[in-house]
Length: 134
Image (cartoon, rainbow, N blue to C red; front, side):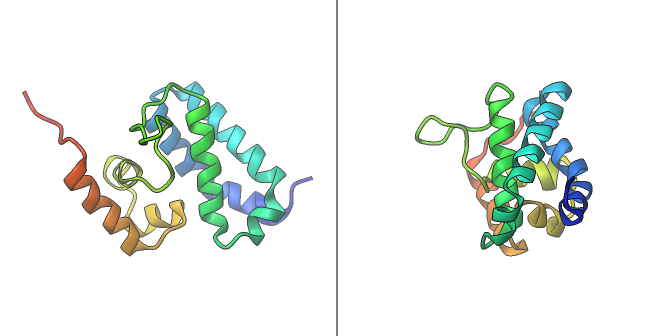
């Protein structure tokens, strides 16, 4: 049986996690499998997650790893060739601009503060290609 605090965490984060995964994988089934895999891992490591310095950020890292593992990598590659590490400008753009989450909610979902989210969005404005209209 799952702990009450984990069930509350899952209920609070499931919807936004699924929206994020769908935006990143561009596939509803892959997104759903990734989110379920993430919550399974989070449940298995719940005690350790709660003891970490930032449990929300720890859960976010698990989600991102699950999303990368369940789909072709549609995230920007990191210098190592792997998919982008946590807290990327791309994530900030997906959560705040694409999914239209309020800044503070997007930041909370990633386990960061609003000022770091603003920094990621500014980085995105400088580094990411802007869509062109034909």
